View 1 (cartoon, rainbow, N blue to C red):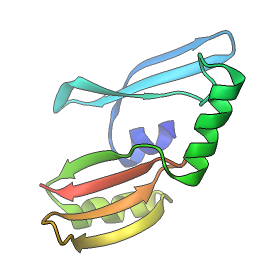
View 2 (cartoon, one colour; view 1 turned 30 degrees about the vertical axis):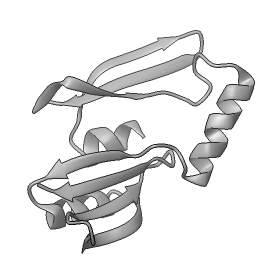
View 3 (cartoon, rainbow, N blue to C red; view 1 turned 60 degrees about the vertical axis):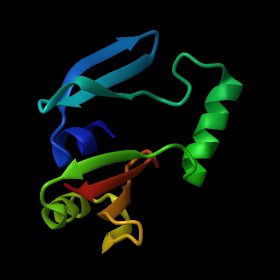
View 4 (tube, helix red, strand yellow; view 1 turned 120 degrees about the horizontal axis):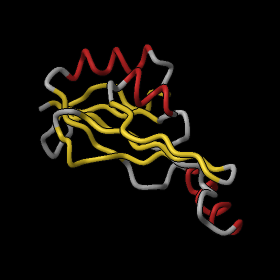
Length: 116
């Protein structure tokens, strides 16, 4: 997922830490320096049972999603689609107002993009 968030979404790597066979990476946007996303394996710092449960929820697609805002939804959609991310929803205007689209990242997390 690191390449997806860094290369397709343009987030910058802020930390890349490895310890005891585990690795976690924090990424963020220069536009929001106080906000970071943490990438880590489901079992990092967790019991086997908890890691297995998280992995199962990811596989089912029921974990919380990330939502990004973009000035050009169509361009963002094409960039993310070209990265190979699974398209869940092409850009549409939702009944409750926003125009958005949705993808699944390489680890199975849902990501939505709203037109800003």
